[in-house]
Image (cartoon, rainbow, N blue to C red; front, side):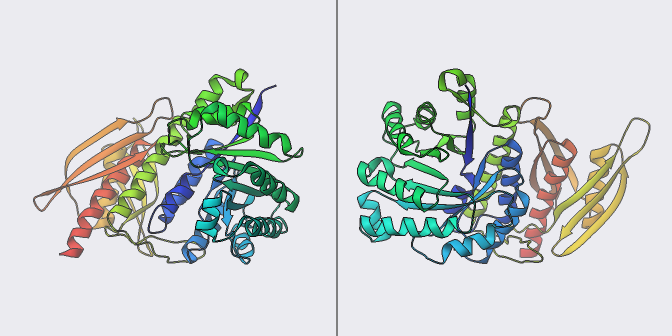
Length: 419
């Protein structure tokens, strides 16, 4: 019998964790939408402990994510963390609280400053507190493969007795070969009671994360953690394809919408690159909340943001564009006609900006394959003797064109403000 293997993606959590600032609000929401539509079983996000921005992000994701479980970690050393975290995620359709604990001797002393027995007590307490609030609780044994085997089993048993419904073991060191990881996963699978799911995280240090994840499935794992950007964990792009191609041999197949995999991964990577470029440029995230909304303030702030557009076009009618842009808290709206949908859209943008620019170049290319391929548009605007480039990506060519034009116009607006 072919089991359906759940995919839990860590891209949003990883993107937040390794940024000095909070993940830009819009980017986190868009990533979650793509992952949810793809059909991942769980979407992991960062903790709510860094301030109100993280709390609002989780609250907004709770209303955005419709199918996947929304997984939010609690602080192992903070007795109040389960209640605070639950308050942020409780409105999600499928909330999950996650209790992460380092269980190797070195990491327990370095991160927790506690001995094994004290860490075991913390695991029991946090899992029990989380289980009292949330129907799904995940215990994650960090650095599992470098821990004492007997103690590792004790932590798993303690977490299950306290109410954990899923146990995840991590090869954080990434130094195991697939057959070694198979044996480690099988050992834990054999001690888990019926009904308790087993998840795994495989580091890609030796470029074997996908192979180790396949071995874990063959050993009985139910959920695999993946990463869209590659180089850290099992690949969201590659692992499901491997599993799908060898489902009979592995005894499991990825529970994803496989036809949308390439499209979704590309879109998420574009969002990740956007987030990274903002961080590298020294962006500062800040919250401006109006009924659970937030905006990010950057070194190159987005003066104008696309809210919506409606295109009417055909071979027997004149093309029109009804466009709405947001400028700060003000909503701008215009309707324009043009020689085709793109021309009508650009004229609608210029009408709202109150100026027109010389279109120096306009390029469109496909960046994925298939009927739902994503298109990338590049626009070059000439203004005051200089060239400003803008890019936009969407499955809708008109939409990507509007985004590209606005992107270039925002660069012009920024330079004028600085001058």
